[in-house]
Image (cartoon, rainbow, N blue to C red; front, top):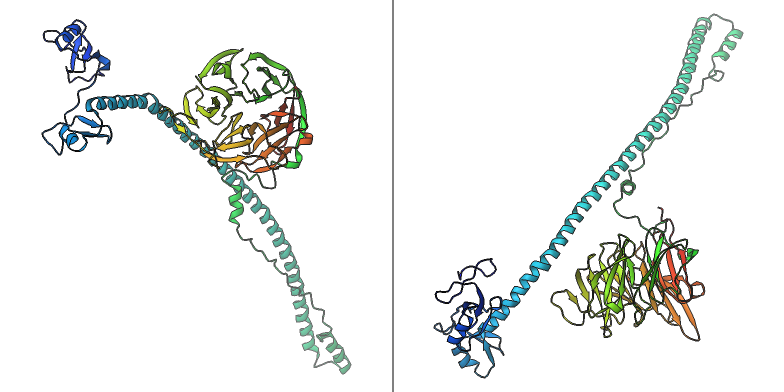
Length: 565
């Protein structure tokens, strides 16, 4: 029986002589399996033995001989040197050190190994399998996309061939016309020349027959007739064939017609012109003051007000959904809701340490329990459906990445180590704490995570794996940079609104950065930006929406051109 592994489903018999009942207990002192009836008998016979439930049993230390003292077993653990030893080695070289029973250390390590194995089976292998399935899907998608491009490239090549064939026919027609014209002219000249030859032959024949028999006066007249000076020659203009040349074959021009890759947005058809930003319209909402916006395609958006109430409106101002209330955060200007790729609303509730998902007609389900951490800003990635959640605990901040079903994938700047979750302890470029606050989150098209850190007064960017990439603290020192809403567009630009308010002055602006956090321009300067702007998002028409604490309206601006191309 002892050779059957403990993980197998088998009947474990009692080791007491003449007893074969089920063993619910185990003696860690003498390594015997014990049933319920024999437990007390065993204690009476063996005073001080350690009897535990069977699943808590310790394994007997496997025998291992000391290499220095071959007759001795290794059974002592030096706590100072962290080495397993025999008693003689310990007495000779480690007598002044603390020691432990090697069997206890062995069982502790064995238990840790079992936990790690369980973790790998239950978490790491399924995660890797999910990723492998994702890669398989990506591989198939790559094949499909490349196949589509091959078809498009073949169609373009056929178009080029057809254009060449058509051009060749037209050019052959032109050559035929030139050929016919030149041949016609040549035939006419040939006719005139032959007629001239006949005339000369007749003239010479007449001359030869007369010049020896005619009178002197007649001879002088005949001489005039055959004089070369008086002969009327036909035109001898030689028809010149036009010079036909073929241009050098420009392979680059052909390659351009079959170009692989994305169109250069910096070409003549620019998609962005800083001078062309214009307000399209103003959308009234049911919110008294607007603190955060989330687009909900097509032509809809969610908004939250200063009382924690969530409402959905369309671009004409019609209220589509209302009545969802959240617990106010102690600093409620924060991006605490988002919309998934499937159109589901997600929001965080700081007071309940939870993330909720709204489905159907106000059906609300808890998706994530954040336990002691207070969740704030949240963002649903349109790239892979992952969720990015900013959390706070005793002024410590972190961002946690979850999959679409709420399974934790990654933590950035976690203050305490958790072996079950991948954790990154990051610093910024000045070796300071990465985040002092996480008020708004977004993800760029290249996978970068961009955070509006109001307390640090900067926008912080990290890579998809959580490594620091950039920070932006404004472009003009005379204007204090106080970032709130942040989002990204189809070109990889980063948009962030800054709102500064004091008793003596206030101003707001919308900044446009490139994907590396470098300032490009102000989309909205203080003189034309809605006051106290803090909410910002991009809609499905590539316009940006702005809302603020000074109005219940959302303002829609167009800034990209040629998007239909």
